[in-house]
Length: 356
Image 1 (cartoon, one colour):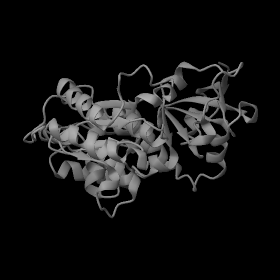
Image 2: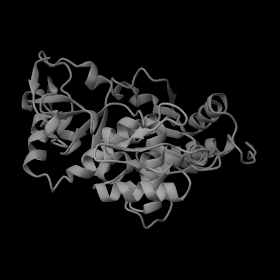
Image 3: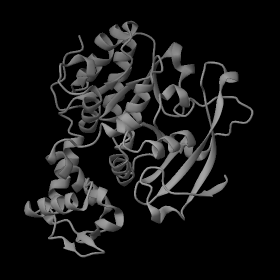
Image 4: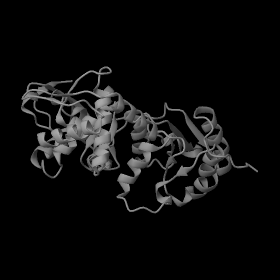
């Protein structure tokens, strides 16, 4: 891949101007036919501030031209969280996902290692993850500090890693979050100078982190079900998937089954974050299911993949290597899914209902 020089298209930090950006061929599909496609050059961006990510040249230019529209400060902080939490390499996309579909079988199309292992992250979905409540901001800042800490008692230089580590959009916010965490006994008193802002986690801080991590995978929370809402799959959900989860001792949750006042993407991401595991049925090949399953895997949440037998040939080639439950009818999916949950996750905390 050719090497070029340029700043990070998200944070545009001057100190990154000598970092190398790697150009790679990315074909995107503008229509159903391969002949309608066009090539959009892409970049692998190794940014210390935002973490590593992929982006097409068109999107990088859009970020530079309209920085306020895309809220670049928050975008960089959320990309950094993505990297700190060791999620898969993100392919940041600003436009509709249909415009980025790789053209399979094209003579000149070479699938790079980066693209084949990345997870698509839409700009709007990423911005929706920004913590609205102060308590959530401090909790996620604490989780970032835990990942950045090299050992117990080690100091963490926030300025070196970027004030976004604490979800701070300015120095004043960084000082406020650091002082708030200190006042609660979660971090040591920050050491501040013109070139350093260092803190370390206390014993109480590590205990709080363990609580937050347990909350994410608490088996008493609802299992997230990602699937198409097509009417043809209603029976499979109502008499197959949901009962299978109950038979295994858990409670299921499909986002359209509960009333709520949240913006739908906030609810989806929030529900996935605290789910003990996720059941993803890829029948009908909905992009949202791929995104939700990838988001869960990035958080380290177990994902059980399924697909109706007559649709398995349409599974995306990047995920075909993952074990799937292939089912034929609602009764078949109930038996197979229940057995799979019990065998790979274990029986849940709720009383198991009779199967008769």
